Amino acid sequence: MNKLLVIEDDVGIQKQLKWALSDFDVIFAKDRDTAISQLRRHSPCVVTLDLGLPPDAENASEGLAALEQMLALDPGCKVIVITGNEDKQNALKAIKLGAHDFYQKPINDEELTVIINRAFFVASIEEENAKQEIIDQEDSAIIGNSPEVMKVKSMINKVAPTELTTLLLGESGTGKDLVAREIHKRSKRHNKPFVAINCASIPENLLESELFGYEKGAFTGAHKTTPGKIECADGGTLFLDEIGDMSYPLQAKILRFLQDKVIERVGGRSSISVDIKIVCATNKNLREMVLDKTFREDLFYRISEIVIDIPPLRERGDDVIALSRVFLNEYSQQLSKKVSGYSDDAINALMAHDWPGNIRELQNKVKSAALMCEGKVINADDLMLAVSDEDDAQFELNLKTTREKAERAAIVKALSFCDGNLTSAAKHLGITRPTLYYLLDKYSLKQEG
Image (cartoon, rainbow, N blue to C red; front, side, top):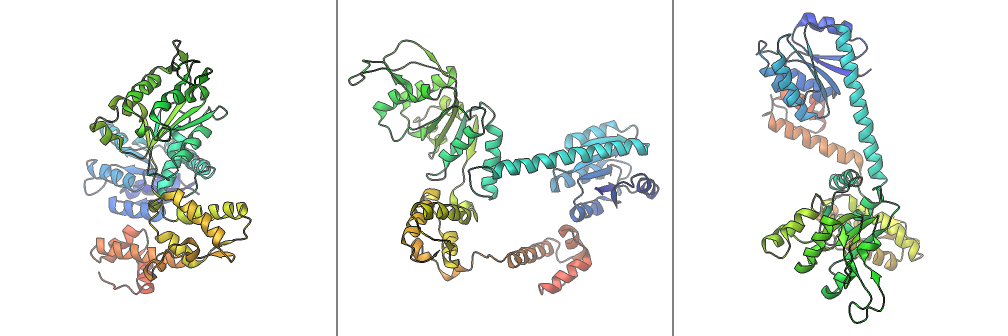
């Protein structure tokens, strides 16, 4: 049965609801502290909350405080506030604070049951949507499950269906090109061209003609009319990589194009309409460049309707290992090498390295290691990455050990926060006091309070 937390201090109403809500696994709480403890312990997705709680049962202050605290702990929780018959003002306050719904006394069992069932239905829909988002993210070409990368994947899913101009920020080698391609793949333009141009790799005097194209005879060597990258991307996506390296005069022409979606070829006089989605990227600080007058402020705001910050590899935790395994499989096949994995010292070296060159550096290291490896397993020497004894202890593969370390750390933190009070610590940890006694003994922690 679905777990339902009922926060009500009136014993008579508690008995009424226990009988009326027999289709749910009902958990009761009589005040704010008990409610928070039950929320931590049972994680119900629906809560009914009587705003008139002790010690301020005549007003709604304690109930509203409980509402804020619960939503801070679990923003997805559906809280149904129950108010007095003439207390619409506090009901509206509760809705503004994030309550899912409200119900006014006197309680009608059937009506309240309908509202609760509706809240569970909404919660289940949101849960399914969240699961689908995870599936969509896992279907991504972007490898990794770190919180930083999951945020990037989520933003890609949200921005891809729109026509907003997207700016990708990140250090060199973080995979901005891959993110741009993923946005295109998930957009409605996915079956149209994806055209990329690196603004830093083309000489300034040639970049304009590369972008806009040119008419026959526009300059020496222009033997035929040639469409530019922008025209070639018509209907699809144009990726302007390293836009921070674009010259100031050319920025003005790009701004006009972004505003009007119209271009003129070099040496031409007629306007050409182009329908494309724009994604830009840079490893430079455009805000500082705007202040230095080296990048147009109006262009900056035009290309940054949505900004996605791509994290450096050193901030992505265990993603390094996932990426390393994918690259090893790829390069082993390319090089016809039978290399199956990494030794423990290689894994520790991969985790300890700072990766200033990000994913591009990791690819190069793995490729050279796959080539140089003489056995079936790559070690730290093959990667040419030094690892110290301290680094060797950093990466713990044993799940039981990792879980116990995290559990012990949480208990120590809770005891410190609660000044050694076991009852309070147990409430914050969402466990019973006997369970806390057991864990204190298990981890040989000092018992106080």
